[in-house]
Picture: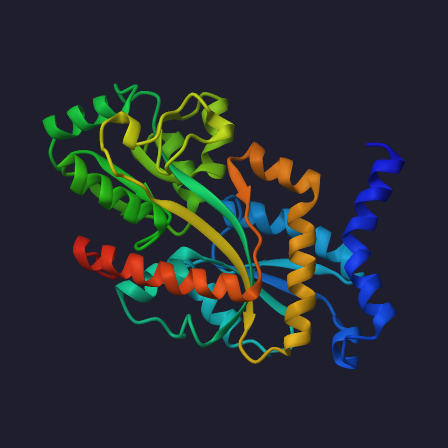
Length: 329
């Protein structure tokens, strides 16, 4: 990397801060922010997609704000434990949360959670959009989703599929697949994508509906076989892998997303600073490349746009959960 290119990227990242300083538009509290290290709470263990995205973004925030941003893994209950911790933090911008569709939308649709996803958080920006992917252990005698469907129909209730937790996007993607393919496959929930991948590679489970970023390295290494992605288009990182709809299940689509939030009642000026920093981070070429290499698309937005997206997704997935009959543990 050349010194000139590095300087240019740093200049782009800091331009919004310089503009604010020059105009004096920020209140004193926002100008002093952050006054101490900032933690980014994620609701899953190391090794999964939320961990990857957070650890890409944290050092960039550190560069912009000249203060340490630290990833804080708080796994459990499909991200609900981490979301609850973040919701109850002091609303001063020193606790951020990379929330997921699972913890903000799906888990609340399935059962009671200890926070109100629409009232207890202040949206900052959507961060990424990503697909799930059906992968299998290489010893399973299936090289396509059609073959997996045929195998599952010949062994009703005998095959299992893993997800990162009950109510996770992978779980619902798997339930939608079961419903549309008319197969009986047993769901095995884990406390994150990392542990599920370990068990798939070890041969303890046959199928994993994984976040694509978790799967790409293992697929490329030959430790897992990819059958289909769950979005409406193929993923650049695994362009030869078809979509579920392409394999014959017309109309199938299940897209995942993460977004940055902070506790409700955080000062608006701080939210605006964090939004502009997030947009800047997600526009950095090295960040975008690292995300794309793992099948993830950067997808920044304004706080208002992200709030509207959360509301729309809540309506959509609440209906899916109800129709699928998904129940909490």
